[in-house]
Image (cartoon, rainbow, N blue to C red; front, side, top):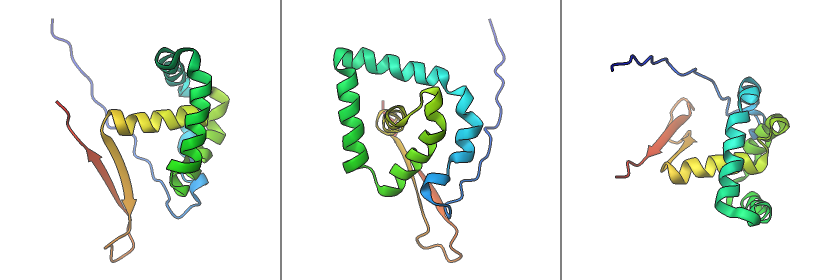
Length: 133
């Protein structure tokens, strides 16, 4: 049986890096907030499945440690700004953090931005992806 697959171009968004970090992603959070419930349910299920009865304590400790030790100030502020909008649908700080770190570590994918060596100040967005076999 042959089925057709329909591909569509992902939406293009602009993230203004001149804004304070807490405000950079708010327009995107507002756009997708009401569509996050299935992702929140999945993340919650995965944490319970992986951590069992230790889930609440482990989540709180890891969230605190990452928020206060591991994350850069800008990244922390960006996630907090996003969480201010999405926490009402369950995508609070801990879920955002686990989703972002999980994507970075499990998909071996991360990105960064820089204005280095840019004569006109244009930021460069760099995506790093490792294929794992």
